[in-house]
Image 1 (cartoon, rainbow, N blue to C red):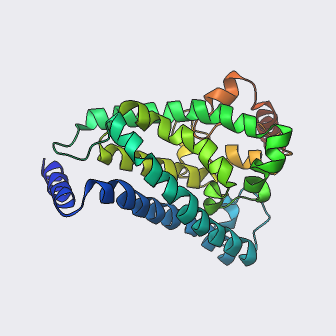
Image 2: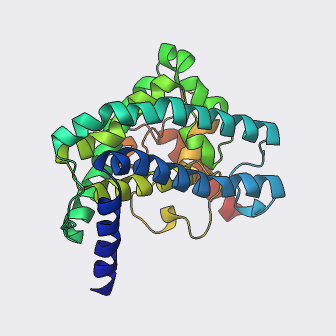
Amino acid sequence: MAMASLLESGWTYLITHFSEFQLSILGTFIIHESVFFLSGLPSVCFERAGLFSKYKIQRKSNTPDVHGKCIMRLIFYHVFVNLPVMIVSYPAFRYMGLRRSLPLPPWSVVLSQILFYFFLEDFVFYWGHRVLHTKWLYKHVHSVHHEHATPFGLTSEYAHPAEILFLGFATIIGPALTGPHLLTLWLWMILRVLETVEVHSGYHFPWSPANFLPLYGGAEFHDYHHRVLYTKSGNYSSTFIYMDWLFGTDKGYRKLKALEEQEGKQC
């Protein structure tokens, strides 16, 4: 109860001192940037300092120049692509029911909506991502994201502007359909950013979510997608693995994992 009261008091302060537009656009943008860079920079530091090398999925490390180019390009994309899209889409979200008023939604509603968003996003993202691996779209659009065959956390949002818009649809379709409270939207965004940064981190730690969450792909699952030729990569899902399993696009990855396990037993 104390936690709920504290959250409600904090929310009261926000809606009293900031307009709906300021919270929905600037607040969302600031939270996204903070969570993205704070969660994505550690893998850059690990690579540069050679830390946790035994948990690194690939032996190859990126150079400081690669890190720097990625960061500068991301800042440009976020300011000149992401932010304008958020501003333009704001009226549509208001129309669909986005609200910031009290009372705050019960946690049962928040969690059920976020779970729905994850599964819907995964379904839409799978098909969009698979389409991006067709020859023309890969060459002219998706190849930008695959410039990093050895991904690190920040590469999760390094992509062609067209891809940002195309696959970004998968992230916003759930909230657009349900018209959530702004608090729910922020929590969804935070979890989605943390998830995509983790799967691009290039590290598989003992505490990685893939070791505990059923159907969660994780860094190993997505890292395979980056280091294999685009026509054979598979593993198109964003969060879970059920879509790749259903449509057989994880066969190469499963075969490799089985081979690695067999070799491990022989050693």
